[in-house]
Structures are given as structure tokens and as C-alpha cells.
Length: 146
Image (cartoon, rainbow, N blue to C red; front, side):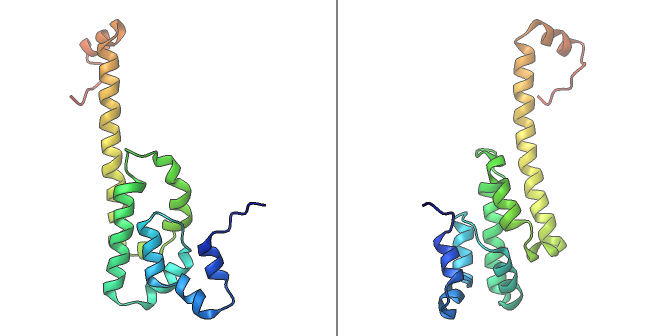
């Protein structure tokens, strides 16, 4: 039958310690992040506290790129990424830093501003196309961003 166990899971569960270490290592986690694949946040957090700052910066860059270009990108179905974000991203120790947390929040806010602008444009075009909408616009009851 079909299972939900991935190669990543099998590698992490392997009885051979060296194989386990490979699947919990920097390159494996960085690769998973870059490919938007699931990884174990506990492995990330353990690694985070034991690696040099240069490797921490690479992980940060990969996480922020993932958020900016994929997870919070309105061109994709953002809601489909919620499970991945909750499982793999939001619990990372790197967000204990207020600087990193604020950067994540600012990325999300900027993406929401884009979505909000698009929503207002659609609303305005719908209002302009109907008689009732024209009356609302003419009476200034609904603010426009245009």
C-alpha cells in the first residue's frame, strides 16, 4: 500500500548514524528549504545553535527567499502553503530574534498590501460598471485607492 513516508523520513530513521547525520545536516536542510520541501524543524533548530554565523546567514537567506518568492507570493495560492509554514517554518528558533521575526512580518505585510490593492481595484471596477456602484462612488461613500 501507499504510505506518506518520504525518502527524507527514511534517511532520518535509518539505523546507521552516518546516514542519519546526512539527513539532519546543513546541506540537506538548506536544499529542502530551497526546494520548498518539508524538513524537520527540530533538526533545523539543533543545527541552528551549532553552526557558524555564515551558515546561519545562508539558512536565513533561504528562509526569507522562500517566504518572499513562494509562501507569501500572491501569484500562488497562499492558503495552500499554510500547512508547510505551520509545520516547518513558524517554529524555527531563528525567529526568536526580533530582527528576523520583524523581517518575516514585514514580508507578509508587504504581500498583503499588494493583495489589498488588487482587491480595491477589482472592487472599484465592479462599482464603476453598475448603476448602484456609480451612485456610491459619486456620493463618496466608499473610499477608492485610485
